[in-house]
Image (cartoon, rainbow, N blue to C red; front, side, top):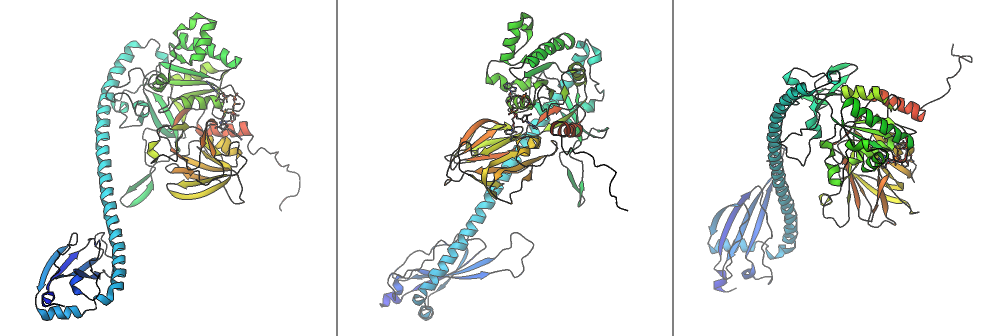
Length: 579
Ligand SMILES: NC(=O)c1ccc[n+]([C@@H]2O[C@H](COP(=O)([O-])OP(=O)(O)OC[C@H]3O[C@@H](n4cnc5c(N)ncnc54)[C@H](O)[C@@H]3O)[C@@H](O)[C@H]2O)c1
Ligand SMILES: Nc1ncnc2c1ncn2[C@@H]1O[C@H](COP(=O)(O)OP(=O)(O)OP(=O)(O)O)[C@@H](O)[C@H]1O
């Protein structure tokens, strides 16, 4: 060691920081034994609070003592990030000597180990800080969106109120048949959806149209929740309330929903099962009656319009559409959809609406008819009462499904979304191998399905394919998603019912033996290759179907009459008895 080497200047830096990151422990050791190659070293002291305080920001502190050697090798001392550094200079040779006695070189291994541990701590701290920052940014973004949405709704509400007032005056002048006029409340407050019930512009507003211009042609209606004849104009989004520290059930979610017209329905869309003579005849008769007696505008499918015009030019007034774009705006024109067929025709009707769906009145001209409570024989009385209102409706939830291809970087990358009223099925298709499907619920692993496949069903679909695969029958007004395996090769795989707010992901493992197939309400089969996934959650647009009596009565009648549920001969009374 030269005399120059001995002229060390020590900077003793004291760094105090709650969150600081030591990226590397600077400790020159290329030439062991030569202090001249040692730039600096750290001494770290961890302070842990003994008791975890009730505070998110009291964690632990680290004190760093940083020793810098500045002799013939003079390099700047690296500053720790966020460090509050105080420097103490030690210039005496004695002090230098004493410090040099510390086993700097011999503790290389320990320091390396210590440095590794510190890196891990630093990484964890960095991740925590980054996570917090991104959560803050996300919260700010949501707040901004909420404010925008609230402002927009307030504006819309104001316009709608003005519009409804004008509309009432117009309706009063225009109405030529007062018997058909639904009871309109004089109360101004009843016209405002923000106060009581949900108004149709909230349910059926067109996302693409200008929110500031209310849809002029649509009849407006209001939904209210009632129970056993008792009518309540109150509706609650929250089933549970939390006031003054007490949790209470605020509203029963499964109350019967009632639809009351606020202005007369003017436009009807009629959808029919193809290739049926009885359906075609009924459709022709119904169109005449609706036009002549009810003065309604009528839409049908292009196929049906062609058939009608082939029969008679009288049906020239019947309207239709040319392309998908016109179909996508149908919900802004149509007040009621009438279906003539079986459950398949209701599914067909629902599939035409990729967003909000107008109320559907389903007439039974099929064999089973779970969702078709109206009898075609007395269609006039049924339609009279529907057009007059109020009517009980079942809000049937739908599932929104996305196929996420293996190549997609995120779930959002896939634009195509498919809405199902019954179910989405992922099965083995024509393959003779077992399907292997990895299922996740809100990113938690649920299970691996090894069998013929899996059905993700709505509660409306619970009486369809899911029932056949052993799933429970569920009242259609219950919000939930049924998770029903198809022929699982396991003794213990029972079906599940999950809450409506979850997102399910069915992943085809990349090492699977064969692809899987997804089908949507029994249609649109799509191949799922290894690595692809199907993501599914509750859709924001339910399908409102008119009830003959009410949701519960119609449901019980359909499982009794349609499936002969629990039909058994009653046991005779003559025989052994308990005494
Ligand atoms: N093994 C099965 O039970 C099985 C197999 C395939 C498809 N399906 C069902 O068929 C549906 C498609 O119906 P479709 O009419 O287009 O095809 P389809 O003509 O093959 O009819 C299938 C049967 O399912 C009945 N059905 C449909 N929806 C129902 C519901 N919600 N509740 C009770 N029964 C219902 C129909 O009335 C019909 O009898 C699919 O969504 C699926 O649920 C069932
Ligand atoms: N308007 C339509 N256009 C094209 N296909 C339709 C239409 N309506 C119904 N379908 C299809 O026709 C098929 C049969 O319809 P639907 O279920 O209504 O009659 P069904 O089989 O006689 O009745 P059920 O299912 O009660 O026995 C279904 O697959 C359905 O998707």
